[in-house]
Length: 373
Image (spheres, rainbow, N blue to C red):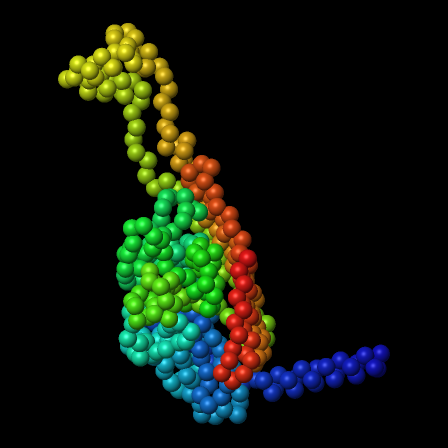
């Protein structure tokens, strides 16, 4: 019994010691953008140190400052916004509003086998980042690009959820040959890559549109080049993320339709001014009103409700695991897509496994291994 009491006292003393070492001032705050929208994942760091946190889905954060920090300032930063350095108030509350940066020339653009700053680029390049794709409720990366790239036309061959998406860079250049652009995924040529990649796995898409930018790929790049960079791993401990959404589909509006009797009367009135139509009507439906009155008792069939009246559901689930060390990083993700549309016998199911491994061989050499299943 004495040993148990001594052990409990030691544990309480240890907990008190740890609490005393980690206790400090608690700073709470909120980070928003120009339109007061919360900035998710904004970095809040103590100036001159490596201690910091990121904002949650509501743009809020909580940061513990050690007791030995008598005078300190916070550095709040977010991609695409101008960073701010502030000193918290005495009550420990921080409310920061970041403004977008106008220095778009420092954006990094992938061309060929290298990355350059946009201000140093003379060629015509259109770019879309992961932030522009993550909130679009669409299973196809090609559809997500529609209307977002200047000079790039994206059309669908039909309304089916698994329909092929056609991409044309500055229109078609040939009437007899294929006008599809060249797709490069992490440095590897992949045919029709946007149909085999999930939007959640894409880090950036750069479209090279003129001869100066596509010259490195030769004649194959004559119709433009779409360079896709997938998400890679990060150094540090293992991290798991989930991204998903669920949507409902329903026919927005049904058109009014005629009953069989109304349809017969309309055809009868339409055929009175033409002899051929009158003869065709009599041959098809009858010649007397007694015969035509049979259609009054025929129940109507609304094909809109039979073919398009189903309530559909769109669902996407994406789970990714990434991590690594100073030499090797990896990102493994699994994506499940299902789309049950309002049209009967129209369904779409897809499972994608995406793996990217980055191996640094030397100071200036890195080996990237992408794999999509």
